[in-house]
Amino acid sequence: MMASKILLVEDEPDIRKTLKYNFSRESFDVITAGSISEAESLSSNNQVDLIILDLMLPDGSGLDFCRAIKSDKEKKSIPVIILTAKADEVDRVVGFELGADDYVTKPFSVRELVLRAKAVMKRGVNSEEDSNKDFETFKFGDLELDLESHQAFIKDQEINFTALEFRLLKHLIDRKGRVQTRDQLLGDVWGYTNSVTTRTVDTHIKRLREKLGAVGKHIQTIRGVGYRFSRSPD
Image (cartoon, rainbow, N blue to C red):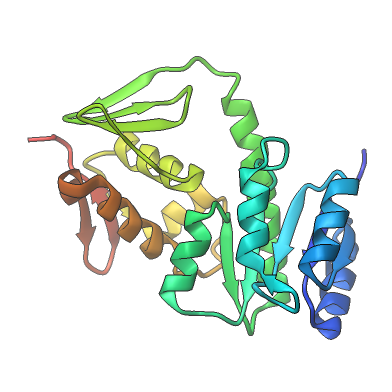
């Protein structure tokens, strides 16, 4: 069985060296790039299973590379983890909107990054398995989810959700009326273990509410616990 291949795009040599060593110890095949131009060449000439991407690169923003990957029909399914010193929420939101699967800020735990990478890749495999299952449509008041096309509509108007936002929304609706803790959501939606801590749940919930408009009120915050989707659309 071939090792999963990671493309690490990072301009700091010490970080590249450290991450390549640690991921190689976990039986990953790691190729590295220090710029966008190098990353473009490597992603074109290699079958890549995961991209770990810095944002501040010498020849441009890593967001541009992420956008290009997610706009390419042949490459858009490659998971992307953004690894950056840019911790502002606006940067995090932009990254997720472009289709990034996770957002890790520096300084970071190498062990946690490895765990997140494994979870992201496992999530991709599970999505492929789900694609072989029977499809159906979920309806909740004015909201309709088409599972086959991964599309969402409110009063026949399409809502542009990322793959993770769609997955999170479906998970909440499947368990409507029941409180889901952040740890539960991290485990069930992201595939993370309890040893991984992240603010990504809150960021995605906020984005879901914004995109859902009036329907967003059905995602309720249970203080000190987590989130719950309304049992009834009324």
